[in-house]
Structure formats: C-alpha cells, structure tokens
Image (cartoon, rainbow, N blue to C red; front, side, top):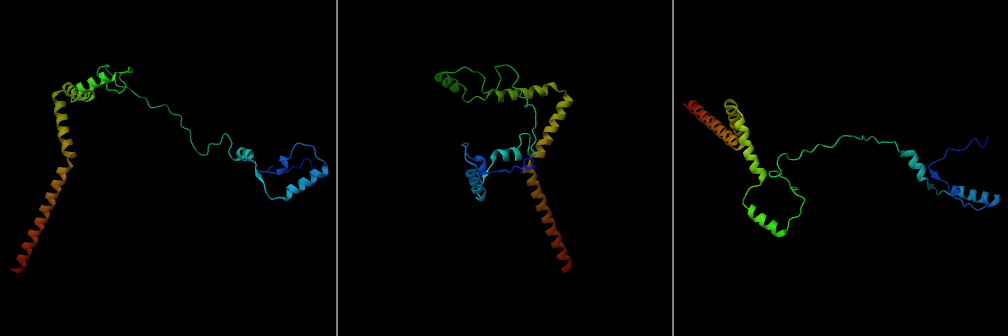
Length: 178
C-alpha cells in the first residue's frame, strides 16, 4: 500500500532527485536523504511549471484573427503616365540622372498634371443639368467650409447686437429721465 500511495509531485525540485548515479550504501543514502530533507533550500522544477501553467494550447485570452491582406491595386494605365517611385528597375548613370533632373526642374509631376486633365474630362461627360448641379454644389461647399468668412460674419452680428442693446438702453434711460 505504501508503494501505491505516492505523494503528488510539486513544482519544487528536491535535491534528492539530483543525487549522483553512483552506488551508495543504504546507510549513506539514508543519512544524505535525512540531511537533504532537513535543509530548507529548494530548486524550482521549471519544466513542471511550464507544463502546468503554460500548456501549449493555452491562448491567454488572445484571439488569433485570420484575415487576408488588404488588396493593393497599383496605378492603372500606361507606363508612360504611371506615378510610381519604382517605375523602372534599371540603374541610371549619375550624369544622365542629373540631366533629367535639370530638364524636369520647374515642371510639375506627371501625377498632378494628369489629375488636372482628368477632372476636366469628368465634367465634359456630364449633361448640362448635372454640370449646373455640380457647380452649385461646389459653390455651396466653398461657402460652407469658408470658416474665416463665417467668423467675420459672426463678429459683425455680435457687434450689431451689442450696439442695438446699447441704443435700447440709452433710449430707455432718456425716457425715464423725461
């Protein structure tokens, strides 16, 4: 019965379990066991701790989200009018690059020039009624987002109200005196 009643293994390692594999007599082993048990120092059984408190399938409340990457659509169109830093993979000699930079100085990037032309093309596709609606919308948008003008108007209204209040107060005082 004593063999079947083994104590539960704790997370601390006994120094007994680390005894050498050399053959010792039973008296020597009993003395060393008693000596080991009388000492209070213990070593941590790190593998047992990892197996107990950090099992492989434990997720710690974190979710793994499997989502595909965001699709990236490169610029469509001819290579000629594409706006990309990686237009070509070939190397360019420094003197040729200097000539190109000197020639391009003062001109706008292709992307900006293309946007200007494309905005004009969109308006030409619209009917006269739709063009008028778009023009009215742009005017209203400019008025709505012109905050500087709105602040000036608000200040004028406030000063007008204050001026009117002062005049009303003055007329009331004059009526009381008379």
